[in-house]
Image (cartoon, rainbow, N blue to C red; front, side, top):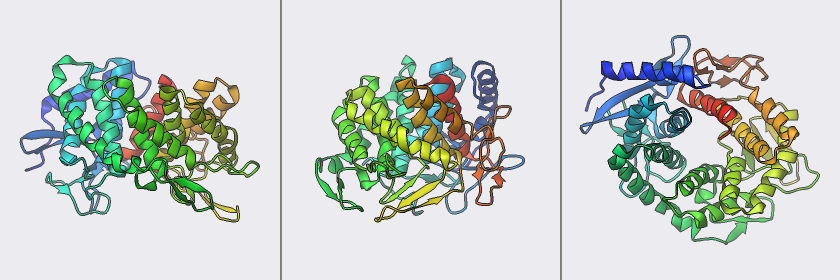
Length: 408
């Protein structure tokens, strides 16, 4: 196995896709597509997106002890491409979708467990703590990516063979959640005396929110029957919501144990998608409490990164660092709720959070640059901007832009 640079024809296709995207799309894929490369593995050309890209030239940089790419990023980038193809009919992106899909299929084992990092020589990193075979964070991102690929490739009859591979992989890996969901409706003692759901995968509400997003999209395809799982996971997320009327954090969704953090905190968005499928008003009302109480608290406190709640009701906030990954999760939830409720105050909340990308942030600097498609990697503890622009920040910035303009 050896690393190959893109053939000239692929480079041309990517440049054409980029230029067309700039003309036809409200978002700029130029920088993201420049982070895309390919590698030959077992006779297949796998596409990937580089983990890191450093300022000022933004050439991809390998991650020490990790690899050149990861399922976490490829999965989310496929959602960006899905949006561009389905909203703008940008078919020049199809070869990239197929190549990235083959990468994800390579990273999923036959038993439905996933690895995360790929080495420069095409070997899978099976030893790093964030790449060992598991059904956890990188599995949920892989499932999100394969879901995006599935919905995209369904539009192209000639892609039936790859579509069948995706279908088989998804059905296999989704069985991994069955043992946890079988515990429904069991509850166990929580950190604050009240019982909490015992049936969420790894007892991680934030990760289950990511999983629920993919399940809802698959259910919407009409090819999967996932309503029971959607109902149970959504109920589980509601069970991890703080309900203390009059408390400053009322409506907060715990992400892990007694902590909330914005990184990947997509529970509100996932619950709204579950509401659309199940019509269970409990999910909508849960997010309304979050939007009425916790979102204004976050805005008033300049969008802190993390909050830890103590048993006596006191809490500690961590302001920085801030990254697009966290801001997009907040924005996606409140923007979707604003769309459903059609209330002006929630629209204002959404606009305030979105404007973090435009300079309304502790560094007072624009974070997303529409001229290039670059989203800076974040604002550090000293309020200085990290001007690097790797895959995650680039992708999350693009997803936020797409949500604003497509209202998806």
